[in-house]
Length: 312
Image (cartoon, rainbow, N blue to C red; front, side, top):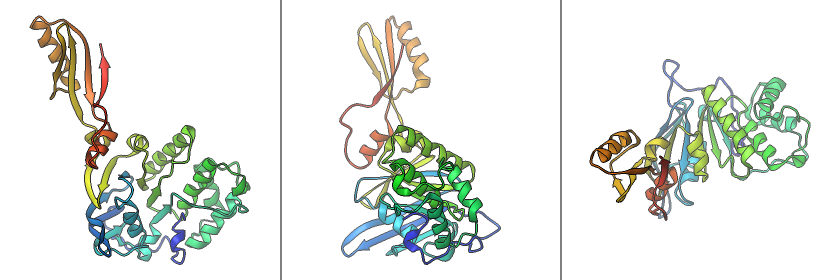
């Protein structure tokens, strides 16, 4: 469960940092990570790095290795080879646990527990000394400040999800690992979580977001890595992965395609066509979406052509 409840025996204390004070290490550094379960290779040499205050999306089909990567970062699974550091500390070490917050996709809090009581319990589990002021601030942050005494059993799914985010933030972690944090939320709830993630970015908190909702990842993440078969098969910003797909121009003689064209080329293309005597009726700038890039990366070609950005 959240707040690294799966490793509750390890207390998160602010003094338990093994990072070099003269420099700021990456929030998460993964180098040559391999994990084998018998003959099954779950991870095959994964390399990635998440900087301070960066929102990083982790995408991939079921069985790609995403959960294994998260478990290694949490210290719940030992790697077969390679290294994982959290804020400069080896994964699984007290310093790494002190810097890390976690919210699983499937979690269950006791129905009888109030929001304030739940956060108090996790403060004890993590060794946080924040007290009532920390609990109030976290409930306000996730827009539950008006219901500190409401029982979990009386909360909607969206409220419980936000409460889970609050407990993952106990102890002021520098890195959050979030597994499908918006999957059970309605559009309003997803907007609330996106706004929260953006506020965390402003505070310098880094987030590894594991999600199947590509539209959410595209909206909020600074960079994305796509994992398939235990390997990183594509990585970059959403804009880099969602590359331009050419320009189509509707003329009197039919549609003309300029495969290497971009939005910036449109005025020149239209001008040249008009100078050549063509009548131009419309222009479409073709772009691939993050979904197109994902399907291509995992070996499933998109069923439809790239999307179009229409213009007169």
